[in-house]
Length: 267
Image 1 (cartoon, one colour):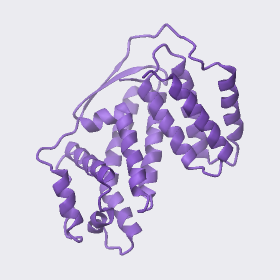
Image 2 (image 1 turned 180 degrees about the vertical axis):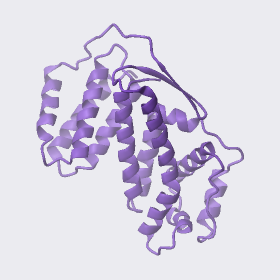
Image 3 (image 1 turned 90 degrees about the horizontal axis):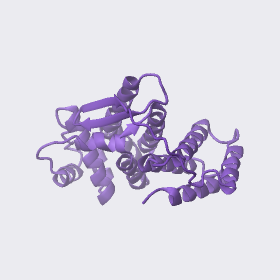
Image 4 (image 1 turned 90 degrees about the vertical axis):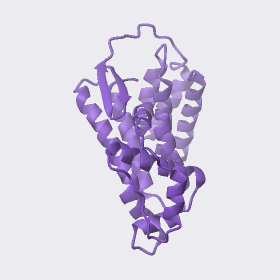
């Protein structure tokens, strides 16, 4: 995939927001938030390629989950002996739980001495989910360091297991077309969003909305917009407005912007 450092920063920021929300989630809402977390990974090529490249032999997730959830706290998951096995195992377990909506309390009980369900889920996240999050964060940080300081230079990133190759992309895109990004209606909508990003909006959500909208606008100006990057930014916008439910007008305008963008993404 082709990526510059600014785009990588947005992806890292959005991933951290999703991860932090999952780590703090109520046990009642964990399935919906977990689905969003898994969806973000699957729709973000640079993370998805890394996770998908990890494998582990003879791991039966259905059997493992059933054994832990029915053990009444006596069994825990074997996460493996390498980083690659840990990534594969934790991701596979979380994806299975999100798809089946398995007994999260029964599973979490094995990772906590607490009696409250919320504390059990929190301890499970700290001991299992955080393993995957930390590996992905370290991976994105390592790529950022190898990219250097230039924000605009494009890099070709390929993943082969734990081997990540990063090289400057020598290709250039010379043709630029107007995909409607300069229409009066869209300009007014973006201006309205910027005006509503006042001091009442938390700093993190404000920055997330500004950066994702800016990146989407730049991509739509290109002859071949990056569909994956645009989808990542859309998810980032959805996360941001979810975190500010009282900002009704702002959220509505962001939703309108998202709907416009969806009509411009090549199918």
